[in-house]
Image (tube, one colour):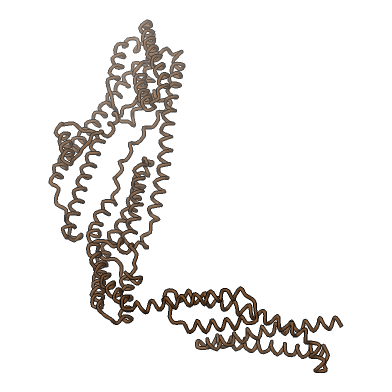
Length: 636
């Protein structure tokens, strides 16, 4: 293939098929849905140092998400139906996982159906997903579980209210028993029974728990302080309580060595509950015993607080990282994306950001959802623009294909022409148009390209064969001109009287040599012109120097023959100098006028500039002559 038809591989590799354009939309839609993040469970607040005085009546937290693998949507539906039929409430985290997995499988099926629809020739706007046969069963089972959980929660709340009512009644009775020593002494058995019943009653509304326990502790201590009879029984009770509380203190102190902070904290809560259920000790040691347990609890609580402070710090760090990813994602511009490669480059960067996002943990709970929505919105915005671009690109590709088909037909119609110059110009112009048109669908690109290049190559190969003699002559002319350039190069390094004459002879030969290959024409001429200018410039300086030396030598003879003095000679040259200055100024004014008032005076301006340049050379020589006269006058 000839030089005129050279093209880069980029044009061919950047063309996109209709299939690529048509499947870009589902790909983008899938990419634009980063996996939804589950909200992290709120961290339990570290217990206050007075925690033993507060009663925890909240239910045990539900377990973490079940680490069970579900490979199909049917397995997910079966598990949800199993929970619904079991009569149990089900684990909240497991239910959230099952819901997420169901719709993950569901969306994947929709994407596959969408892709198959487009590959079958369907239009993107007309796609309607089929109804998922498994979705009604999944929804019904989930609704059953939700209703059961709501009922259980309602029953639990009612039970809390009943427990609250009974505990208030117990408090009121213990307060009555602690009103007088007689009541305390006579009703010890009833008091113990009330204590046992209090321990058996569990959850109450959280907002009343601390108040209830503090009142219970106060009334129990008041009762023991009033108890006068049965000192042995009271002292035995104090002793057993002391043994229990000292054991609890030792266990609390041992928890400080547990490396699992959360486990230690949870075990501490169990100890607190047992402390709450244990009666008072002797009044004189009550504060000391409490202080020891409080001190041991404080160690665990501080570790627990530090643990969640670290989590909070990591969450803030994660928020900063996710914010940086959002800013980076939002900085991606789409205005300059013109080809599939351009869009694919940004798409790969977004996939990398999405992958990096998944490696970053949770942000603070109040910001976690917001930062995720920001990230997802930026992804969606990009892929929506990508979908729109490929929709427009499909139309553009088809338009380009029609234009290139027309160029192919024109080239094929000219391939047998013998009008070498005119047809060659036309084909070269068609090649330029081909490059400007842009890409076509890939499945048609190769065929069109082969037809077009085959037609062009056929013509240019025929022209090359027919014009071989002309090219040989041009190559011979090139060798002659290279020889002239070499001779000029040698003259430029030589000094002598007849250099200019030799240059003029070589210039005459240059003009007599015929055409050279077109691609070498400009390079050869530039080198030829530069060498000529170099020689003439050097010759001009030498001439001026000789003229000045001749003036110095002949100055005395000129004055003697003219009968003039050095002063007369200087005045004559000074007047000539001033006339030249005036003449140069006039030319410069005229040049300025022509530049400002006419767009057609370029040749005249160029001539005047040459005249001014020559006058300046003469002026410089005259100034040196005046200087030489001055030097002669000083010597005399």
